[in-house]
Amino acid sequence: MPIITVTLNQVDDATTSAQIRNHAIDIDRPQAKGGHDKGAMGGELLLASLGGCFNSNLLAAVRARDLDIKDIAIEVSGELAEAPARFAAIDMVVTSAFADRAEFEKLVLMCERACIVANTLKGSVDLTVSVG
Image (cartoon, rainbow, N blue to C red; front, side, top):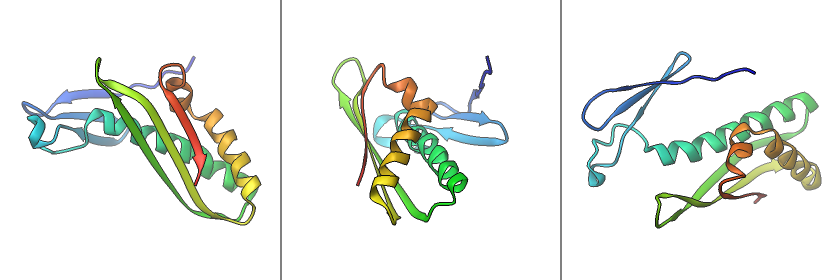
């Protein structure tokens, strides 16, 4: 089984740096939560990871089929639960300029099923994906 590894190191009293292949991402809290606001919070990165993983699959599917789909935009929203701290529900809305809505909806469903992050989250959170 392939393994994906990310290395994280403390930068200062509130900031962590994640090393992902040749990329570095700072993770921090807003100042109002005791951080230095040097980067996104982990929960925000989880939402970004979901959208990024999904869109990577979608862009590959569009290229492979040579479809006229462009201007893809994704909004991922997470509803927080009170205790323990977690996302109770996550909603992802995908919009685009497309010629055939039914074809685009089929691609969205296919890419949702291919997304590692979506597949991981589905057993733990109410995840919805829709075309806007």
